[in-house]
Image 1: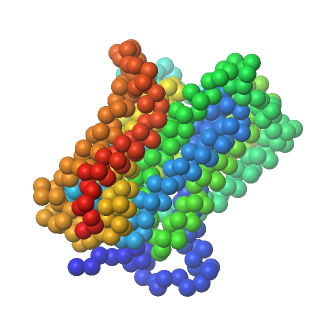
Image 2 (image 1 turned 90 degrees about the vertical axis):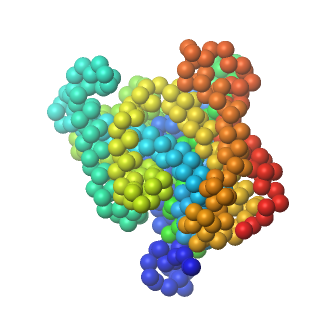
Length: 484
């Protein structure tokens, strides 16, 4: 039995033979990343590092370093997608087993549902702001006691949720086309925004000259590393979901060169540039409005004339493209893998959108503590061990050699007898375990106030700890089994 290769899944053309054709292939991956990088959560997360005490350039370098680090597992895991044309949920069967793969698929899917809801909330907030600007006064009223948001905010959230259903219905190709054509637009808008703030503020503002608060004599002297490490972990956590399900995209690549060059060009550099943009624009807002505005939606609402409409429409398109590419494709495949005969790819998309509604994403965003230490660092503690297992299994145990037809057999070599690989389960559990006390303290400080400093420190490095422990445990338990 033969399985379709990535070439077959892309289209029916022969492999590209010209430099122009090869450039166009990896452009799709670069465009995918540029499209996903240029998003509101990435902008606000970058800007929050300055608010936490870093200088502008410390914040930019932290973001760049985090993305350079997370690029490594992305390239390693993405190799299998490009080589064998398989998505993440199928690749996980080689290590977790044909039945056990449902665990990492479910972990990844639940996190993506949360992100889908967060991005949908941002999109709804833009509609809410736009309506307020058009009316000339804020809309809404008193918050609904059982939700914590007002009726107008809820309706705008639901409206944006409904807009995205079009792309859920029309599938993967519509999402790929949206990302391909909106990426250049987003880059152009960034330069327009830089020109606008420079023109209005007569420069780029005082924050660029602001020193780090961690220098001797500063308000947070000597506290740089205690801020840097959780920030770095949070930044890695920001892309930890895609570090796992990257085969869902690279399976359509024509070659390893396409996925490697596309991701390398498309992730670290654009993310670093977005961080610089966030710092520069926020710096200029101090001059324009007398205070730092870290939220681009808030900034757009303060513009005048046609600029308000254009800015908010661009942000809306941006949020749709990012949300669908980053937070719909992966969980749609994952939910389908849980019950292939009952849940199609489109059905998985519907399930993702439905769960995003009930997760009430505005609760996650209520505070920086919730967003960074509970949400970003918390789920990186879950996904890091899975990444460690996948990389060790594919490169050290399998030597990148897979029997693809066996991945679709319940009684094949990847079933491990009962469908579950105990080595992967043990590695996952041991990778997560050390981070649980720190997570409980961060998420429920009143209920778990006595967690030791050691566990709090371990949780600061949650993703790194999970990857390392799971990789070592799995490697030792699978030693000698060899590629099959």
